[in-house]
Amino acid sequence: MNPKPEDMAEFFRTRKNGFGRCLEPTMQCDQLAIRAHSIQNRQTIALLEQDNHVLAWQPRFSPAGPDIALRRIGRNDASTFAGFCNQHDTELFRPLDTKPLDGADREQLFLLAYRGITCELHAIMTGVVQLQSLSTARVKRGADSPDSSSPAEQKAKEQWLLARATLLYRYNYYDEPLLRRSFDGIEHDTIDLNDQAPCLAVSSFITVNDVPLTEELVGVAINILPVSETKTVVTFSYAKKDQGSVRAALDRILGSTLDVQKYELSKLVLSRISNVLISPRHFDLWGAERAKKIAGAFVRTIESQQDVGEDADFMLF
Ligand SMILES: [Zn+2]
Image (tube, rainbow, N blue to C red):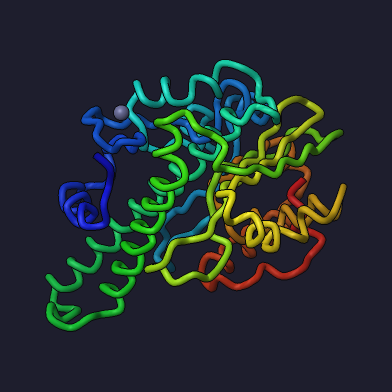
């Protein structure tokens, strides 16, 4: 049995208090989800950490609204999301977690992308729950009328459509093929950043075209992982049929090399991805002014979804 759009309403109704549910491929697991790492602790975070800490984007609440900045977080909590139970987290990702990453291993690259898309799916679903609670609370306290469509309700509905589109995308291109151990429907463009000290790690999934949420989305899973003291690997993973659109959207990255490529990659990370871990040693090299500028750019793109713009200080490597 697999998720159908009409099951989604029920799915969300039964999960009012956030997601404790295991998002394994069949969506049938009853085990409680644990806080699973989206970025591997033992191999990847180990290359970034200092005194068992890394930096991640974290909101803090202030009277003026959420204050988002890169803050220190313990390595065991970094990049975790409650998206898989212990058993599925171990079993699904065993081929990825028990051997070094090999850029020619299609199973490993597929699983890497699967982790990225599931982490993003979990974040989107959590957003649905939060926006729905907010909308309900506004009606309850009389701020919005129950029978007209308020902006809060509209936002919750849009998030719901995004969750549905992402879930269907994962089902079509990942869940089904994963159950058949068929990894050829997902293509990967891989970049090796050589002579690169471990600076940052990323695991996520983004949409690349402004397709209406009622249509099938076009997306790409992105992983940036230091694999040694001198090498970082970047992978872009997408459905075979989307190769043209994805490559066009990423042409500034795929078509450049060395520092220009790292700069273009930095702008993409800064403007589209929140699941990012930064090495404290590297962060300290930026200095306070530059760190402030980078945080400002990150927050601005969340709020306005506008292009991050050009600034040499946006280089994250
Ligand atoms: Zn499970």
